[in-house]
Image (cartoon, rainbow, N blue to C red; front, top):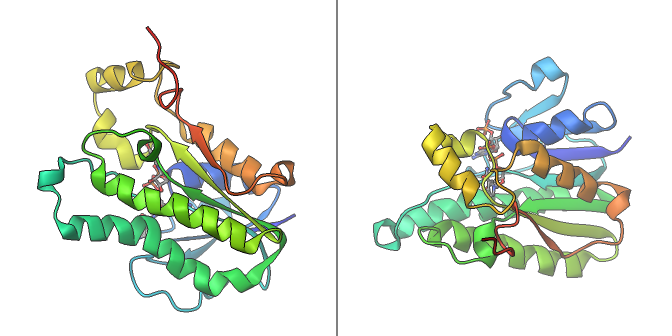
Amino acid sequence: MKNFLIVGGSSGIGLELATLLKNTHHLWVASRTPGPLAAMGITHIPLDVTAPVGSLDGLPDQLDGLVYCPGSVSLKPFKSLSAQNFQDDLELNFLGLVKILHPVMPLFREGASLVFFSSVAVGKGMPYHTSISASKGAIEGFARALAAEYAPKIRVNVIAPSLVETALTARLLNNEKKRGLLAARHPLGRVGSPGDIARMAAFLLSDDSSWMSGQVIGIDGGISTLQTP
Ligand SMILES: NC(=O)c1ccc[n+]([C@@H]2O[C@H](COP(=O)([O-])OP(=O)(O)OC[C@H]3O[C@@H](n4cnc5c(N)ncnc54)[C@H](OP(=O)(O)O)[C@@H]3O)[C@@H](O)[C@H]2O)c1
């Protein structure tokens, strides 16, 4: 049994990951609200990553991995995005991760694995994504540099999903017409499920991926690389 910290594991992809791992590993989940975690018997640590983060109370002495899930989808034309909008996205998607890692890095054991989230929109330019792409782009550069700095002790990888059905994207998928249009944009003909992404996160946390570090893995229904008729 390994010790994993999932930041933002109370809903969406993080909750799906917690559900996958809860019977085989020790989990600590940090988020603003506990969601269904108490009923699942998972330890919850109240945390807002946009507030100052000191020491994280309640963690074990050693950790084998961390997954950082908090993120946003603020799709707007560049002219409608203020500097504060960019700052807010950066705080949640990237600077919150930096704040968490400072107290947590000393806890990682040899062979620990860190998993962060980017977006398909970093590698493929998409309109209305300037702010979120800037924040997620920071994650990708940071992850590669961190992976180099901590190799071989700690591995760091990033998952770059396309549209996945969670609370975060509920507004984009709230009727059948929108859902159909967005599904059709993906060569594999559907939007993603939390499980599509959580299974990759579980693989990256596991020793099955022990020769992978510094990678950005697209799980995106083929939209980043495939041109279909
Ligand atoms: N869903 C997609 O289509 C998609 C696409 C590309 C990338 N991603 C990325 O994948 C990751 C997971 O997305 P998701 O769709 O699973 O999101 P989600 O359903 O909104 O879940 C986000 C999790 O982060 C927590 N969280 C949010 N703000 C927080 C804060 N200030 N402090 C602490 N915890 C906070 C939430 O819990 P509380 O609300 O209780 O704090 C929740 O557990 C994100 O980084 C997202 O950008 C998602």
